[in-house]
Length: 179
Image (cartoon, rainbow, N blue to C red; front, side):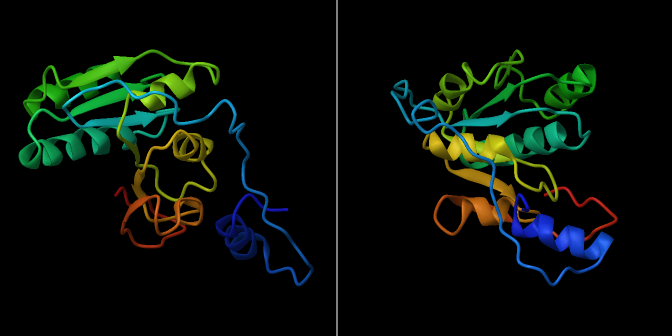
């Protein structure tokens, strides 16, 4: 069993090909719990980055994305949900880009709380490069959120052609190429 076709390719690359049968079993979510629900009425676009923010480029990429989007859609906001490792660096970047008041930090959350967080947003930003099978993407889509993501790893398999937009990035096993 593999979590994604990407995981199969990874295993083949690093461990050698197997000729035996295999299956892909993506991470699962409870679609009764993770559902679209009621969206709050608002007139601004809200982006969300959620999950673990351990990888250092994920949040700066999301903040830079907000800066680009704000040039086209004034007042767009970014929600950052989860634990932030280098808060001071992120706050400094927000200030440098003139985004004060457009970024809201939400605390770490549980799976019970997650659907309400997804319902606060219009788009999930998933900036991790070569992510094998991110549950956060599956949960967000189950809640009705389209996903803008790094078109690498297993995420394109999850999102498909109709549930979001993949930002192209080179395929590389040894270097990270943030979207």
